[in-house]
Length: 532
Image (cartoon, one colour):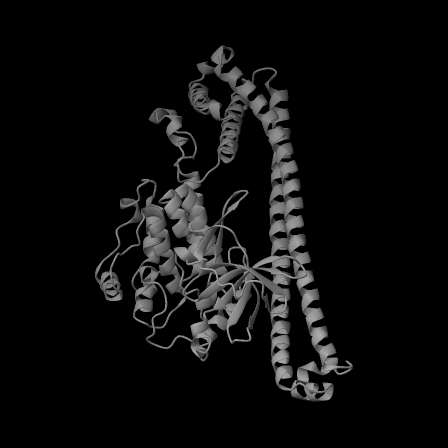
């Protein structure tokens, strides 16, 4: 993206409130500037339609559609739009969320292809954003690496999807901007129906997602061609090789292959239908990979080393802490099984009972803490959704009032001597301001309302941030308490296991069933003790 400076716009006030600070870049749709709200100080991105397209009604309609579409999608992985309007020279503008990060192409230049361990969470976030948009009948229509920005976060990569401006309202068949037979998109990431200029569906975005995911893992799109015709022929006549066969990290399992290839199906009915189905599939794969090879220990008779069960795939996405908790739970379950057999065979060693009772009480307390933790997560998600919904309502209210202000200013420029009565007659919606003493007072009132709404929006964003920080602190405190109890319980469990499998437990091995179970417990403990 070019960043040649355009001094004429620097320092200008856009939309009456946003001061242009510098040019960020120039793309196919227009120019993007860094701006700042005059009163609130918030940094924003200002996107302007290119000058040569200012009189092109279809391009203008596309630009306005970006605001309409994206404003309806309230999602943390979609770049938000705060306001829209038109400059005196006719150019349309969008006031958007300002983000700092690298798009996927820039990330590839820096690190090369992505290992699945990093790529899969990115895929899930993209799919989740598409699910939110598709559930509202909104398509992106130009999903590609340039439009996917990765922002560093405290807990990993955060995805931000740009340019829903090419989106089309699926339900609005009578308000189409792209004419039948017109191609609009980037060929490497376009489905066959999009290349052919046919009617699009949410599955069109799914194909683009599949192409993006394919390239993230392999370094190349599914098909490489020099023209649109070659892409069409490739899609019609060839089947893309599984990503695993081309991924340099050799870490792509069959389940990921299948999801991506299902996204890349040529014919829409064979493809994953929408973002909702896609994110469900990806999360199922995440869960499967996280638990693969982490099942119960092998039967001793099979003599399968426990280490094979604990060999976590690097693409499983499971953390060290999660693995430690799983090992602790397995050890506890195995020990409880042995203890039950000891009770059944009436050979319970003295002194074992009190320690097992203490461990059981701790296990119950840990379970209650876990339930409380889940409750906090659900409450957090509910609060997040409520605050986002309120933020979305404020955004749309600001846009509506800004449009009214813009129309009013243009009307007053043409009717300098307009009275309050004449203005209210021309714009019945302004009747609520009929008590104002002057036309300028009406305009000032509109600007005041816009500013107040923007202040409330900023306050909501701060509430959202504060709520997240508070929830994070509470969750950390609960985690520390839970972790401490888990350590105490693990200490008791280890003491009991070492007593049972040590020399003191030799008398128990006279029973062949107990001997087999104790051997299994011993093998399992030896293989997992370093993870506790």
